[in-house]
Image (cartoon, rainbow, N blue to C red):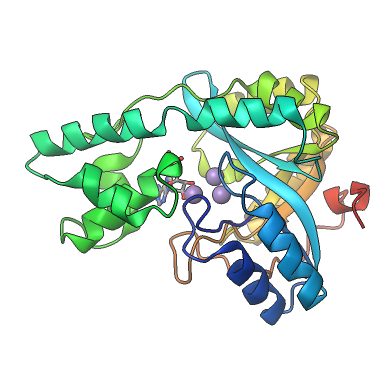
Length: 278
Ligand code: AMP
Ligand code: MN
Ligand code: MN
Ligand code: MN
């Protein structure tokens, strides 16, 4: 049982890094990567807990990338989290979040929703990591939407009234930073971007040319069809296969159970066969 993509309250998850590791272990997981957005600050706590539980923990991070004006997420796995260039890149990516929150709150204000700035910040354990997830939670708690999905379709999703275009890291830059730190770069949840077949081809080709290693063939609640499709694409582009729940909290929109990813199709080359960390 493996899970190579999940979040703690270091970014937009609910549980602390130690609680994430404990829950994964309780769910029967034997190999986990904690992949908080743009931050590796939870890895030390997760590692200590993993040693206590006897579960194998791999360093992870999910880097926000802007590719052709769209946001794409690149997961880094099994890298040296002390690498200065990688940490510099992550610090740069984190920097814009508070300003973006101001802009999102101003747009919500125009729609008659006030208090989003303070409301979202109050929900973030780490203010510099305040995320659209926290704004969504504020909107739910204040009764403006029923659930997280609705918060994104009504207000926060790309092109919606409170969306604020944001420039994250470059694709090649993020891949190079992960590789430079001795890790493997993975395209997160390729089934969730709504890209055309052509856009996907361009993304996979550029990613591979930049030194990218793998794509998530399974993410969250994706189904068997998704797995078969993305296993074929991984094979076509010479990429390894990864799998992760993208767990943020129990009962969340993507529906993944922490620590429990289904088996990958037989034509996949698992990314975990290439990990160097014991
Ligand atoms: P941010 O990095 O602040 O732009 O927030 C992105 C986060 O919002 C993602 O990591 C997901 O956790 C969540 N998210 C993005 N799109 C959706 C969606 N359509 N429905 C629910 N959650 C979403
Ligand atoms: Mn998230
Ligand atoms: Mn993501
Ligand atoms: Mn994620």
